[in-house]
Image 1 (cartoon, rainbow, N blue to C red):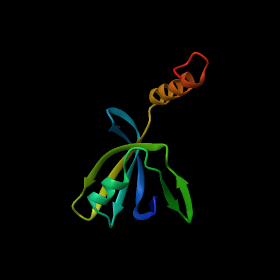
Image 2: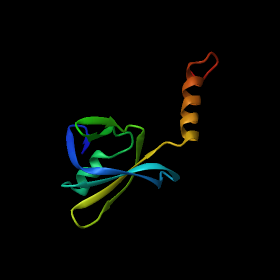
Image 3: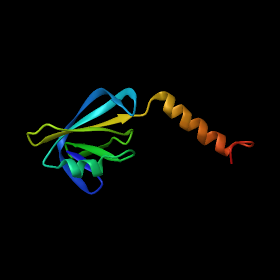
Image 4: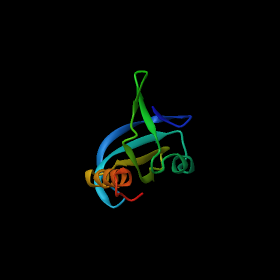
Length: 107
């Protein structure tokens, strides 16, 4: 099961490498049934927090925060790709945050 916001979606996750936001990166391909393209496009946006439920335990997947393509397989199943930030993206964000708080920074 996939939990996002107040929604519980039937599905599973597969670890993949995908081009998301112009970079090849680790990603999760979420295979979802019982939903619509419109609903998934509304739910799975950049920085959407979601978790995977397995055996009653929820596992946070917020590190997969970049929305990729949604594919309608025309059999009632959709694939939603959510990618991780690259190490370079994370370093740039860290640098931007530390520059803003250091003396002589950008504040």
